[in-house]
Length: 185
Image 1 (cartoon, rainbow, N blue to C red):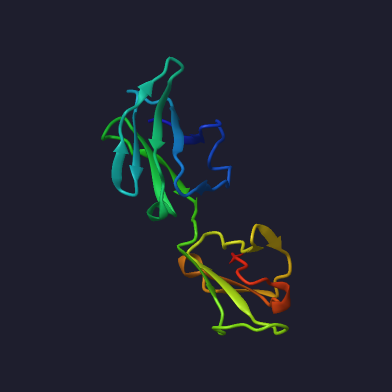
Image 2: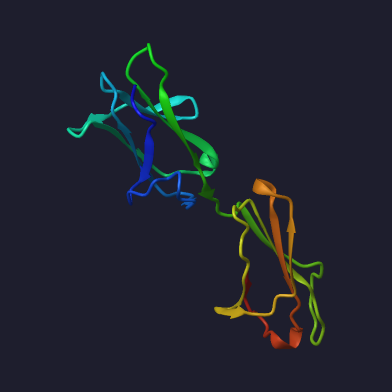
């Protein structure tokens, strides 16, 4: 029978030893290599239980490879199982290697809120920025026009996974702000 498959990324790193995540919207390029097998094995890629690539090449050094190009990964692919399977006959057990796709997810929503509808000079107001749906948790920064504001009062975290909500609160003193100033998070 063929040996157990080894999955490499496009930098030729063994993915079982690399914990690097992929960014939402990026392309994934993987190579599955299998040594040996008589007859030479078929090398197939599955996404969960669905075949997504069954093209493979028998190399001269007794290695069989399948190059997977998986374009534009999205939220639906986070923690999905990519499986490389090598099989050469119904008489032996197929060998496989599983790769869990870890995806950095962008926030689904970002909102600035304040309890006060109007502000007046020399008073303090809590202004909140809430970000939801990102993995890992979002890093929230505040901006006045195009300059970053450094003083954030607190960061709050609620939930986990897709339900994680990160809230950053800061308290501006209104006399520091001119009329029409843009605040962004």
